[in-house]
Length: 286
Image: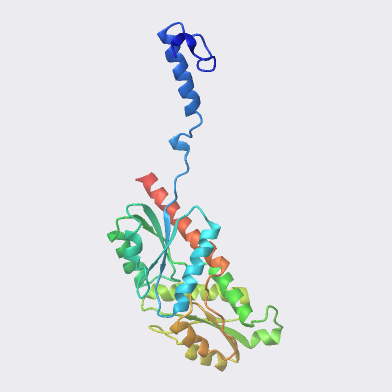
């Protein structure tokens, strides 16, 4: 085909010079490029959210954290959610971080207070990882944990409405794992106060190990004060040996662990967002 026989649709304008030809080609390219979104307008992939679980030999613990990860994915589909364990379960945290390569990630501890794992283990793994990481605060204390504790107590049989006599004879033991770190006890006591405000009865923190009082000791102390209707609120993220031991000490009702409650998923995303905002503020001020 020669230039004198080009179809009308090939070039809609008469090309009487090289300049006309170049103008036509440029117009065509511009039209095509307008169909492609500029790179600056493409939505960036958010940092991965790495849920950091302690790990447990109880298979129900792994099932629970996986269910919790699924709830987080449902709430925020655009965020890549990964799982890493401090010990006992696969994948271990270093392996989970290595799998991310050099991409950004926010580590959200599935831990309810400050302590050795939050201060040492998790930041150490983050620092050694090839990924660009940020470590979020532990889950507790926070009102969303209290919402979860309250619902678990209701499920176990705690009455939603109490008369004065029943209230004066009732109390709750907030059963936690325990730690030698004084900040861990401070955080647990704060959660106990928040739960007491919600329930309108005394809430005493007690521990399965490493701290005092133990759960049976707390139950006896409350009974000595005339509080014979004592419930155990399970301040554990998932079922396990400590949670089971604490539940056995309940003289009345024993609530299930926090588990994959919807409020827990919202709290995880809240900690994730907090860490991202803090990181952005630090970069802006640098």
